[in-house]
Image (cartoon, rainbow, N blue to C red):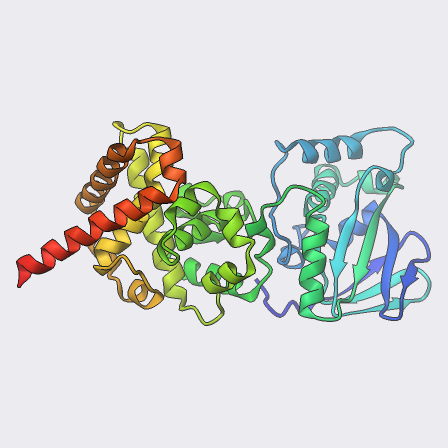
Length: 365
């Protein structure tokens, strides 16, 4: 990843672009072969750096919308491609119109249209001769945002046109790039752009989704495993809660330890043949919370306590003990989805944990 993205690319247009406002924003049609060249490196691989600001990676040809895009490209109908497709949005630091039908784009970032772009790339990569007879166009919007806030607003707006989780729409912030880089140094892969690491062939056990990290942080740092189970998007869409969890001043090790312990617990639970899928779904975030509570010896789990928690002490035996403890309390409370999604069980579980910690403390005196 080239964080600076120092690219200066020229985009050939099908006709004179429409210039909007005084900030050199443009709407234009681009012939499909020219757009293919724009998104392709000299070695004919996809120019991935320009997609870094996109909230998702390629979702695969099994997704209905991608199959539809590919079907449109392969059709022999008279309808132009841009009539049937929402097009592409590119953000840039600066745009200059060269002659009549070219745009010179400084630091281009495709923030919406990755699926369309990848299908166009696949279409021409499958048969290079298609470029010779292709005359259809794609609609391209090139925008120079006034500020970071404006940039984020554009990313949010353009991606709300198709279903994207609230958590996914947050990932354009610098903190998420820092998390991704830090996780990679520790052997985990933060899926900041949905499906990126799956497409790279990484193991599911090593991939941490945006939502899963958020659920772990909600469970541990906010001590709200009930919300992590029932309504994590509500917390992550709330600016106050989000800013508390994803502060730029947050030590990256806090994110890593929450994710690492979360993956350990999640993986261990799914290996157990004695548990149903519904039970695992209901107790996983309570178990992660309990693991940190016992590990930090406190139910008031702060970022500092998480940072200082030596997670190397977690082994198979400890996982089993904490899981059995949580499952027993969950079943005692009723063992239903309603129990897992309600606040009463978390309060009851915390009290039992506190009693256990106090008992251990008294015994050690």
